[in-house]
Image 1 (cartoon, rainbow, N blue to C red):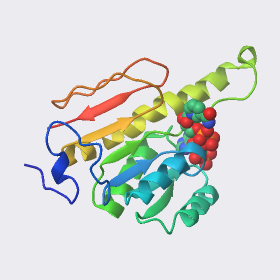
Image 2 (cartoon, rainbow, N blue to C red):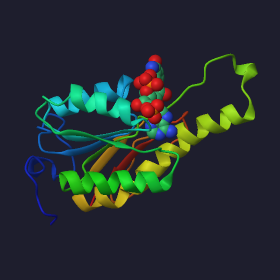
Image 3 (cartoon, helix red, strand yellow):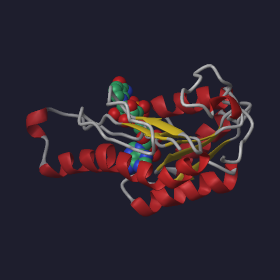
Image 4 (tube, rainbow, N blue to C red):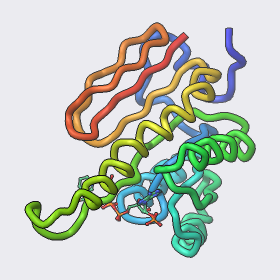
Length: 185
Ligand SMILES: NC(=O)c1ccc[n+]([C@@H]2O[C@H](COP(=O)([O-])OP(=O)(O)OC[C@H]3O[C@@H](n4cnc5c(N)ncnc54)[C@H](OP(=O)(O)O)[C@@H]3O)[C@@H](O)[C@H]2O)c1
C-alpha cells in the first residue's frame, strides 16, 4: 500500500474519481509560462494544486509566477528546455523537492513555425520535432518513476491519443503528438 497523501485516498481504487479535489497535489506544466500552459497552471493552482511551471525564459516565468501568486496552490517557475533530457530530470527533481511528490505532468510545451509548409527547412522541422515530440517523451520519461511512486499518474498531451492500460503499462499513440499515459500499481 503506497503512503497516502491528502486527497489521494479516494482515488486509490482502479477508477479515478474525476470530481475528487485536486487540492494539495503536485503538478508540472511544461510551457506553463504563457499561453495555454499558463491557463492550465492557473486552473490547477486555483484548484489548490502546487504547480511548477517551466519555459526557457526566466522573465516570462517570473511574470507568470507573480500573476498567479494569490492562488490557493503554490506556483513556482524553473527555466528549462524540454529538448534537454537533463533539464527534464532537473524539473522533476525540483517538483519533488518543492512539493514532496508528483501527481500530474502536463506536457504542454510546444511550438509551431510561422510561414508556409513548403517553405519549412529541414532545420525548422527538426526544431518542431525536438520540442513537440521529443520534448514530450523526455519530460514523461523523467517523471515516470516519480509518478509510479505515487501509485497513480495520468498525463495527457495534445489530441486524442490512445488510453493507456493499467497494470503498470504505458503506451504511446501515433496521432500527431498525442499520447496518453497511465501508470498504476
Ligand atoms: N494556440 C493554439 O491555437 C493551439 C492549438 C492547438 C494546440 N496547441 C498546443 O498547445 C501548446 C501551447 O500552445 P500556446 O499557443 O499556448 O503556445 P505559446 O503561447 O507559444 O507558449 C508556448 C510555451 O511553451 C514554452 N516553450 C517553447 N519551447 C520550449 C522548449 N523548448 N522548452 C520548454 N518550454 C518551451 C514557451 O516558453 P519559452 O518560449 O520561454 O520557452 C511557452 O511557455 C503547444 O503544444 C501547442 O502546440 C496550441
